[in-house]
Image 1 (cartoon, rainbow over the protein chains, first blue to last red):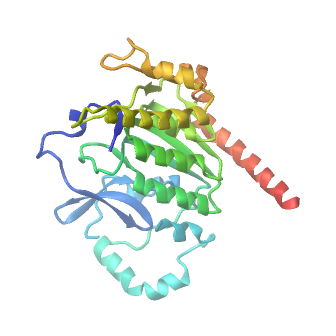
Image 2: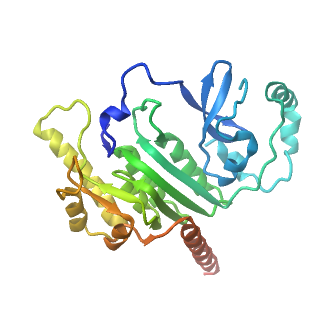
Image 3: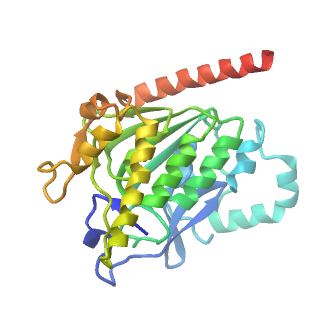
Length: 69
Length: 250
């Protein structure tokens, strides 16, 4: 892997331990989104769709929790 | 890929009958777990928007403190955009610090080979591997305040310093240079001059090109914002439609 970036290496790879919650991509109502597990809840981090109308849906705004998915 | 069936379905006012039949239990489960049924479907947009932010992630997953663009998600979306007849154009919005060379070039090649019109817009920054992605669209815009850093490809992390390493890096760099020069109006000479110039960046060789300068050098087509970008995309879509209908007549 060769990185071609202006960001310094130490900013991209911080010390072990502060990596935060695990994130993964799921399909919810046919919208691909990046979610984060917080205990029993699943929180939306980012909408991954290319359709701009998906970003206007009230039910899937980043920060919302999805409950058990 | 999963989204193709959804976007491919023609304008259906409500949930299709097939869905309600075999999804009765699924619907109940959804109400129990989420407290709601399906959200109403909005009419899909004919212009899709690809946002390329943060680091472009390659074969290695970056720690979650990085904001990343994952190529394995973008590529199926680009395939869906190419296949779906309801989508007429693509707007690529960039605010990236760069990232993996191979992943960046993969996204660039995908955008460049789309049969549908594409317009890119650099907002904030389109650095390093963001440069080939910005020029891969049919027409490119840059915000007046946005910048693009052009610098040599070099290794980060553990490096075994043998001459072969540098040859390999040189080849990597040539791939970036040849892509940029073949998809924009900048000459190879000028691009290399920007890449290797001294005294512009504080800790590296290279140049930080600002909006209007990027246009002067021929790297980007025009200075503008989202309004101009959408307008240009609509023009290109019209042109594309005209060409298609002429093709049908012949």
